[in-house]
Structure formats: structure tokens, C-alpha cells
Length: 111
Image (cartoon, rainbow, N blue to C red; front, top):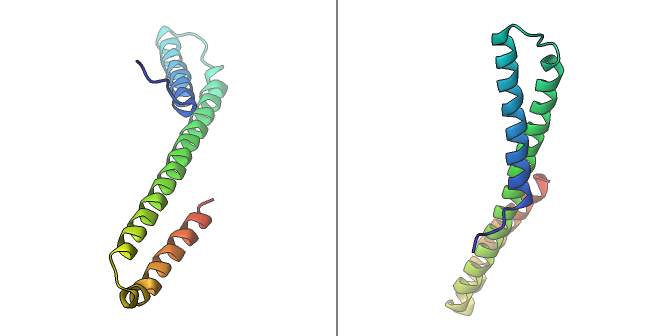
């Protein structure tokens, strides 16, 4: 069964298609010697929409990856703590907390 495409990928594909079509149409109009003044407005408008959709897609992917990294960190933390003695847990607790704080600070600064 074919997997349904995500909204962000559909948006990126649609805006990319419009932008490319706009550029190709402008080149064809120019080559045929027709009036190209409309493209002075349509190319920057389509490019701005396309750039916004690219930013949206990358921001969404970044957020998803940060969540996956956080889950992986928590799983690793649990595995480490399960196999250690209480003395060792206390010994590395500060380092693990420092890593977690740095991750949370970098995550909050990005949004």
C-alpha cells in the first residue's frame, strides 16, 4: 500500500512546481519576443512563496529530529542508570544533567 504524502511535502512540491513553471514561462516568453513585464511581479511572488514553504519544511523536519534526539537521549540515560551502582550514578549525574540542560537550552533558543 502506498504511503500518503505529508502536507509539508505536498506544499513544497506544489510551490516548487509553480515557481519552476513561472521561470520556464518567462524564458519562453522572452525567447519568443513577447511582453515579459508580468514576470517582473510573478517570479518574485512565486519565489517568496516557494522560499517560505522550504523554510516551513526544514523547520518541521528540525523539530521532528529534535524530538527523536530527546527520546534517544532519555533511552540512553535509562540504560546507563540501570547498569550502574548508586555511587557511579551520583558520580555521573552532574554530567548527564549538564548535557540535558544544554540540549534543552539549545532547543528553546531555536524556537
